[in-house]
Length: 246
Image 1 (tube, rainbow, N blue to C red):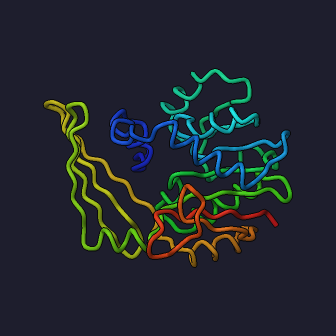
Image 2: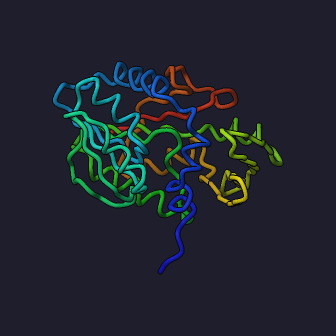
């Protein structure tokens, strides 16, 4: 049996959801509403929330009246998402590197830095090509990534933090390399101890422009935060890129 990747191991644990449990529905609601106001979709448009987690963003899209599909690699997250009772929602377990629904969607969202997990750079391009193939002609893709320029400045040689969340102790260490922005996560739960890792590719706007050009997209708009303010490479927290399929 193949060894699991870090994201297969980490995202399917309860500790991932404990550590990031502060991501509440009101935060998701505000961001989605801002995006929909900007995109101005048609009532019949179909959305894909790719790497949807437990479905908090997908639910907000459906609440606004749009048929929404969610896909995530984590079986635990999808099982949780399927408990949401909404007639415009459906959820599936799936890998974002693969084409699941050819030319089905008008919009595909990939939110909260749910991109760039893979070890090989060609898998980034593979993922974007798969996304392109699932969009209808002229469809749009929204990528929400961290702003690595600001992140690199903050982390520098490393940042260590400790958290106590409901009696579970988390100790995290963030580092930056030329290739990745990484986080080591040590968990102490009573007498049990675990070690997990996260890393995403160290990709700036120039890297994304190159990837989008190679995968059949044209960049339309770039924002720097969830209020959709103009991006500032040194100050913005996010890099939110809206592209259109050629």
